[in-house]
Length: 249
Ligand SMILES: NC(=O)c1ccc[n+]([C@@H]2O[C@H](COP(=O)([O-])OP(=O)(O)OC[C@H]3O[C@@H](n4cnc5c(N)ncnc54)[C@H](OP(=O)(O)O)[C@@H]3O)[C@@H](O)[C@H]2O)c1
Image (tube, rainbow, N blue to C red; front, side):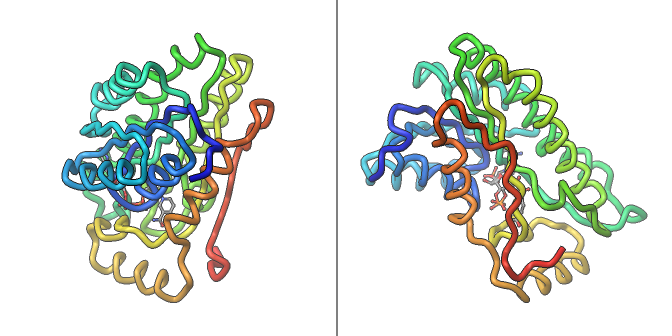
């Protein structure tokens, strides 16, 4: 077990699978105490057991980040249990893809609620404690889709462009408080995200494209996040854009 995050307290949202799960494990291995949040309790129980078996400390927070009050509660529960929150990883997200003309706007609204408004609500809840201590790190998970919009991803790309813009604006508001803001923009990562696309033709096309390359693994992204949050206090990694070597766009 390394100790680069010894004494740090983190909340990872969307920790029940994929990038969030890998990040929570990597944080615990690096010595952080970790609050793990998502909706699927059974997955969080299994992850907490894994962290504890490795000698780490985990707090389970069951919350729906599409509901602002629940996103805020997740932050407050972490602060209550661990005394403060040093690192917030806003990772919970969904990817619903379909052509605009066919779009189910209720699903698209829900995607904005989870990917954007939940992230904003959690961030807002975390800022007062961080500002009071002049220390804190917000890590927002965007995507290459936050830099490049493609067909059938109008709303998903919209949520990720919003995360990138929010992160840059936030950084300029809070840097004087010594709060760091980082945005991570991965390309294709092999996770469950594509299982919920909801439009069979688009899902097949994306899966075929992903299968044509050596995809990033959740651990690859987790390593980038650990790198970000383990820099000395005067260093803020603003942005990490990372793709599989085999991914062109
Ligand atoms: N996979 C990729 O290619 C890729 C590329 C770039 C960026 N990303 C971004 O990376 C993040 C993580 O995705 P992933 O690829 O690791 O996919 P994933 O395995 O599907 O993980 C998504 C996580 O978000 C949680 N989540 C979804 N809706 C939620 C809600 N309403 N409330 C609370 N938690 C919720 C899920 O937990 P529950 O279902 O248990 O709630 C799960 O833990 C997302 O923001 C995604 O947009 C992914």
